[in-house]
Length: 79
Image (cartoon, rainbow, N blue to C red; front, side, top):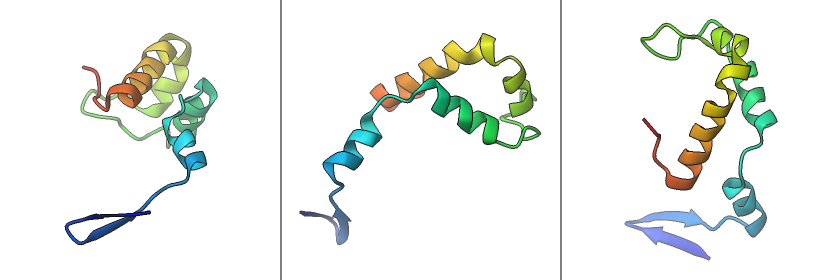
């Protein structure tokens, strides 16, 4: 099945790929992404970088995981 939208064609993904996209992220996956980021890169104007987040992961972990879950479920970033 190919979907068409104003001359743009999209291929349908497999059920297996769809399952991967909609499955919940595991803690180790989120942590791995954060640890793989350049520690010196600033995330925004607040001055926090990935090295800072790595250092206080135990404190921020639940909030970060909740943010990812909320985004996956609602496609909106929580404030």
